[in-house]
Structure formats: C-alpha cells, structure tokens
Length: 311
Length: 315
Image (cartoon, rainbow over all chains, first blue to last red; front, side, top):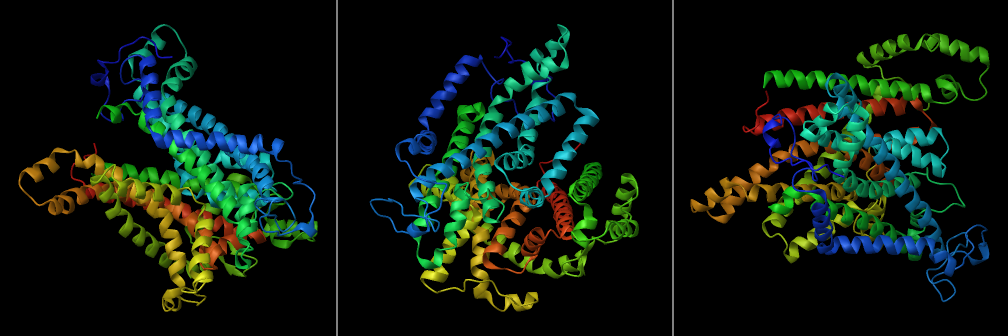
C-alpha cells in the first residue's frame, strides 16, 4: 500500500503548521506496522472483548431467529405483557411479541443502520476531507467553513427537523443520519492530508505525470486509513445512539418494524407498572453493543497511533 | 495575537453566514411551503398567494435570502403561529431556564470530571482507573433518555426521594426555589458530559505528567500535592476550555432529551413541541440561535485558550 519511500528525512520539509505525521507514513514499511498494530490490538483485552461482543451480537441477531422462531409481525393481545416464563424467556410486550425474539429482529435494524451510516458517512467524509486538504487554499477554507457551520447546529436539531418533514423509513434514517455524521471524519482526514501531501512520494506523483485524482485516491486516502478506521468504529456507536434517541422522540421506524431504541422507548412507558423485562434486557443489549464499538475504536486508536506506542 | 484575532473573527463571520444559509435552505426544503404550514391544509390558492405576497415568498431566492439576513440582523427570528408570539420573545423567555440547566450540569460535570481524570492519570492502570474508565464508557454509551429514566426509576419511583418532574414555575427565580426538582435533570445532563470530560482530562493530564516541568517541580522537592495542583492541574485544564466550546451543541442536544423526560420548561421542550406541531419559524429560529451561540462560544474558547497559554504563539 505504501510505496517503498523512506520518509525519514521528511520532517525538515514540513511546514510548521502541519500536524503530527499520520499513523502509517511515520516510520518503516507498511507490513511491519500492520503486524505491530494487530499485535497491539490483540494485546488489548478490552478490544478483544469488544470484538467478541460485536460478533456475538451479529450472530444473535441474524442466526438467532433461525433457531429461536417467533412471530414478530402479527399482534396477540391475549398474550400481552406476560412476565418471563419457559415459553417466553424474556416475557412479552404489550402487543404480545416475544421479547427475546424481538431483541434479535430489532437488533438487525439497529445494527444495519449503524453499519450503513458508518460506511456512507466514512466514504463521504474521507473524500471530502482528502479533497479539501489536497486542493488547499481558498477552496479548502470554504469547504471547512461549511463543515464548521453544519457542526455548529446540534445534529439532533437538524435530524428532528428533517425526520419530521419526511416520514421515517430505514433508508431515510440511514441517509439523514449519514448526511450529518461525516463532518468529524472530514476534519480528521483533512488534517492527515495536510501532512501527507507534502511527503515526497505524494509530490512524486506529479513528477511522473499522475493527476490529482490519482494522488488523492491512491496515495493520500490509503495512508490516512488509520484515522478513518478508528472514526468509523465510533461512528457505528454514535449512529446506534442517535437513531435510538430519534425513536424516543417519536421519530423512529413505525411498527411493526422493531429496533432497540423503539423497544426501549415502548418499555419505558411501563416503567411505573414494574414491567422490568420490557426495559432492562433491551437497555442492557443496546448499551453493551455501543460500549463494544467504543472499546474497539479506542483500542484501534491506541494500536494505530505509532507515536503513542513508542513512548 | 491581533492578526490571529482578526482572522478568527472573519472565519466565524463566514461560518455564521453558513449557518444562515443552512437554516434558509431548510425553510425552503419544507414540503408545502411556509404558507401551507401557517395557513393549514384548507387554505385557498388565493390566500396562499396573498400570504406569499405579504411575506415576500414570491421574490427571487437571493432577494429572499438578503431579506432573511436583514430581518435576523434586526432580531426578527420570525413568528410562531402555534404560540402566537415572536420566536425571539419565546427564546428570550425560555433561555434563562436553559442557562440554569446547562450551567449547573456543566459545573457539576467539571467538578467531578477534572479531579477524577487527574486521579486516573496519576494512578493509571490501577483498579480505580479501570473502574472509572468502565463507568465513563458505560455513561458515554448510554442513550441520554435511558440514563434519565434509570435515575427517575431509582430516585423518584423506587425511593421517593426526589420529585419526578422538573419545577413548572414561570420564571428562573421560581425554578430555583424548587431545587429538589432540579436535581434529576441536572444530574442526568451532567453525567453524560462527565464521561467525556473525565476521559479528556485523563489523557490531557497523562500528556503533561511526562513533561520536563513536572520532573523539575518534583526535583525541587515540592510535595506531590503541590506538583499536582499548582503545576499539573493548571496546565491540564487549558485544553478543557476548547472542549467546553466544542461541547455546546452536544450539551444542547442532551438538554432537549432531558427536558422531554422531566418536562423541564426550557428551549428544548419548546423546540420539541414545535417539531411535533411543525411550527417551522420556531424550529429555524432555534437552530439559528444555537448555531450562532456555538460559533461565538468556539471563538471565545479560542481567545481564552490563547490568553491562558503563553506557549501559544499565533503567526
């Protein structure tokens, strides 16, 4: 991925304003850095725990319903609000849905939205940040002020306006949340690009006749991948939380579609009635999943940050 | 310092224009036009044409934008049809209550997060550090509404120690005279910020602990307490100023949720009601107000940061 160019002599050519070197370009060849990164990641028990939880949740949500079959579409009011029993290990909801089965089906929607938002927003943000940083000058200034302006208005405020106007569906929620989640990535990638674009191997692209697109796509973006991956993990966590909050504010997926945020919101209505099985299982599942993605992001940051490792 | 200040002010002005453009675009994105929103689905085409004529919605868009900027510059944020009041007076009425909520919760979050973050940095990889890291991660990964409901379930429903609803008094004085009702909203909002502040403080203090000036201070024979408070704390606090500026949008978002849970009569509740009733002038006015407040907050944070840290030299 990284051309065999030793960047050892580079710091002297960097202007003072440029931030610290990127995680990958800073030293040595790429292979050893990846191996070292994987090793540091594996040494971090929290990261392994996080990864384990995510794998478990994916299996639980997608393989679970194949083993544990429940009806999550038609209501059964005669079997509503039942406490946990052998037939329903986590009880039933007010509409008679089995809670354990609904956790699996709802989790599919929550995880899919989280992953989809992370993919879409990471793509937009990476491209935007790389172009802004590489082109520089007035264009860069203008592009970054747009990001600043969007960041100034709380995401939740913009989301509430947009989702209120257009009725929430799975696709709409993904698009709208993505459109507001790429800002952080764009800033980070721009910062990385500023330090990468003065490197000799990027400069060399021009000398051998490569165009700007090649410089950005083949040399800048792959070298900024560290910050991108770290941020993507945090984005999944944030997206799951934001979409759950939208559910609470009444702007989630309409029934019979299920999501963890929607289930938690419904359950909280029964808090005073003591129907704990409608609140705590889904609440714990949601929090544990988000914690797992945050653990992974945190560990990736540590393992990809070369400076930190050498300290 | 002066050139830096001028550059930052110009930048902020550009961002404010950006915020204006965003709210302006949002107004025009709305299906059915502002006239439909104000006059309702039964309005006749003639009534809509009249409304557009009176409010200038039939002018070319650039002209409408300048008109919008002009009105905002004169403090006219629009008129709420559902509340029959100007948006500016609605915000002015609710703002002090939000300041109570935001100032108290942020102060509480700092009072907890700063010392605990330093403790974690000093005792890193100890049991206490791991425990606090775990707590911070859980708080950070919890939807604010869930956290608020858990506190509600414990302290209001289970033990009846605190009232489940925020004070409903009209003025700030009325709200402050019922401190018991303020505890749960303030604590809920504070715990979310606390998680971020303590993590940030921990890494900031860890960066500073390996600096030479700490070694020098220890070598001089100063007591550990003096080193931590006089040298480490003061230097580690500086980045928190920037964090506070950047956190404003997140804190406002948290306030919307907390106000909804505890029925706290602030701007967040006003905004949420406006969203349900599709009261667009209130929505746009609120978005604009918070956006501009954030830009000004970030500008102030940068200036204070530069003033506090003599090592920072702007060219």
